[in-house]
Image (cartoon, rainbow over all chains, first blue to last red; front, side, top):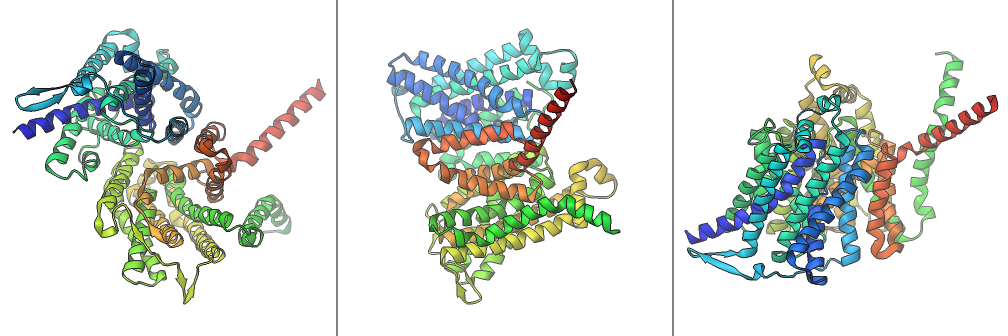
Length: 289
Length: 333
């Protein structure tokens, strides 16, 4: 029972991370219909920024998180302007290839400037654990879940209550009608990339003290985020959040009770199964963002 | 057909034809000019990748479907050939052909479920198959786990053991040219024109009794067959099959060669294969910045030559024409 609870707690923390990256991916897809293969590299950059600001510059950890959010948010906007927008009208394949190119550049820049050596650092929270009914809970993991939930709520309020958020929803539901209404589609595309970058950057930043930071860390995360987005329904943000926790917990149980070696495969099995059984995802596209 | 039209046709096609013949001639004569075994090795890889991307382009360029598992067929072909020849003692030729057939079987396994999907969902589903295979192969002791299958012998064709770099180069050149002719004939046939119909308008194709799903599956099978052959060559060239064949980096590599070479054109994608095999080698002088520059080159090509390298002559012609046009206008003023 304790083992079960422990796996559940770990799975929720993992799910929170997949959720942030997956929601970022879903947001871009919902607005721009681009599958961003560089999403995992956004996560990697966020982790590096936090590592650098905290362990190299000696700033407080909160500053590291904010710096990661700002840096990766700006990076997202830059990627949209330089890489995606010029090819946006050239069919649906080319933007995908462009994001692959962006991911490659980010990864290789990280290797060239910071080497492939894994970096580790720690924060006060990462070193502390509490015991709850025999389950050891690392406080950094609590922070991961807390930050994720706070961001999901903030994003929800943003798209439901603010004018620009409503405009984003409109674009994701019907691009042509939005254009007719004169909504600033270009700006909304930039915003989607910016918000997506911020979310994903924060994900990297809050995981970095309990994981090692290295240039290729994003690759598998991109693939996991694909599973999240497919399970939740393309462009469906609430669906992505639920899906992320399902995959995170599923992975944790699979690793704990099944095969640790094959722990990464479960997300892809879920992905293939859901595509074949219910290709619109668990919740379909109708909910939108 | 009367004589003047024939002449006109000839005049129209000549520059293109001459260029194509010259390219093939250059490929055949390359080992006489290139003496460095290293350069010849890079060229050998380029010709092999040309085969992979020509087969890949059946999906991307001719069917307009983004599959992301070409390296799965390629790697599977490699493993099947390596296991049969190195472990089970099969002759090279049967390993080579069975590699292609195994890839076709895999295409059916992936294609039947995945082709119920379209666009991004199909792409991600095929990617999931490829990534899952990578994970499985790395942990299967039976196929050597992370170390892979080593000691794969060099190809032996009708009793001749090919082991020098020149012999291996001519082997892959022969394989690729033969396959290219076969792929060209398939695409020109009635079947190939049906593929074009699907790409043009899937709904319309359905109304005239074409099953897009079935034809896409046939396309995937053909595509896989040639990728499997190339994979077999690859492991006999390197004398080892490693799980990295299934790595994501090869999906990216092949996709870039197709898109940035010029999808839908066999010459275009072949050009892409040669260019993007040589660019990283040339960039070696940049040392640690090599990969970064390579990535930037890719991005610049995507943005400025979205139709691929094959567009370059067209682009130049358009530029020249525009300049002529401006001179004329100025003259009139």
